[in-house]
Length: 506
Image 1 (cartoon, rainbow, N blue to C red):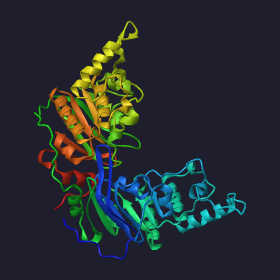
Image 2 (cartoon, helix red, strand yellow):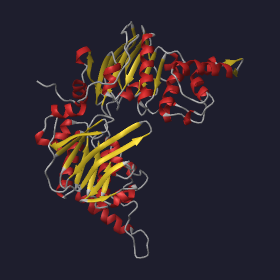
Image 3 (tube, rainbow, N blue to C red):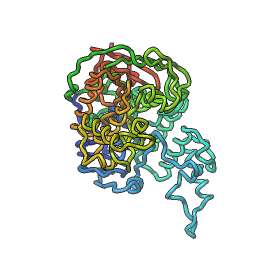
Image 4 (cartoon, rainbow, N blue to C red):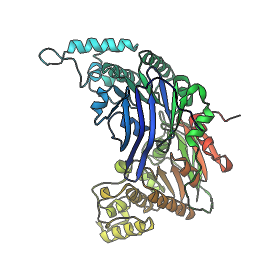
């Protein structure tokens, strides 16, 4: 879809030619973005499109490798977060970055509190100014209230009051309604209208198309770290936006697979959690790769963590083979043959500071002892067998796992759990943040596992990966299953429509 350049007054903020790379990953490539006074611009894209990276560039957390940032037509840089704030750029995140032990007023004026002529904090002035700022946005909060006693919606109001306290010209709202009730969402919409009336330029990031069409004046679409198009909301349809988001073929090369699907291994029915997910049901078969797709906050990882015994469901049944089991701990899950490779391998997967071989043998220590003593030779043999299968690149098995690349760390975590000889392996974002060569190795190994009869659940936000590797795909939205797709129904458009709650085109 070709989009004509926007004709409009000079934007408050303009990015052009912005690029940013990390080791093995090009997060942004020559992107552009314009934000205008008194208007809301929706930034739209799949998970991994580059939205979070551009927010960090705008707020001075990341420095771009190339490109120009202009504020009111003047080229500038944001070498620090404080520089961005002084330029009038502030962000309100899905999880508000505030301090629970401080009061509302202290959070609003943290770092720029009014002072007396002796240089001390003027507490009375800070409280009075906080009350005025809260009144401007229609908030009836007590400036003396401690933040930990407030709900999420009230914390968002404090974050917005903080933005006004530094006279922000650009307000970034990153998934601001993800944890709000229906009533609170509409109160936020009213607040956005007030900010527009004050001339603020607002960048609104959301996966919810109903929100975008209700609140935004303009749109910008990113895909795979690239700028795809921009325009006015009245000139675009939901279908066109979906096409811009996913409009690429599944052009990655995935391993050819013989789809020999066997008997049911894991059957889940009515699985629910008080706050994270509800009425989850599916069957996983021997030799199958079952994909789970969804947008941020869909509840995919929470379901998998529950199946691995990290959190307990409030109700529901889980059957392994023909046996009904109630998994209440990770040790029990491992004993039942279920293992989980987490998305955050740095904090939850690998134990940095330990060598590779000890990371791999950790869940299998019961088989690594002789007369009550660890047998290091067995540990080395176990690690060698599985690292060779995964083509791990390391100086030696004694190497600290924290010194490995992201892709090789991922291989260590996968090897660790495969060494337990599971029946079901859950891979949560298995190729996130790793280079294309390591991705290919992980994909190849997943295909081998399925061919050997292992049942695989793959959680992924990458549409090519989901479509290229899965036998079936379950799409989740807001903690529930929105669709189950097979065969010709497994298309990028159907995935995104189900995940975003967009009705199928007539």
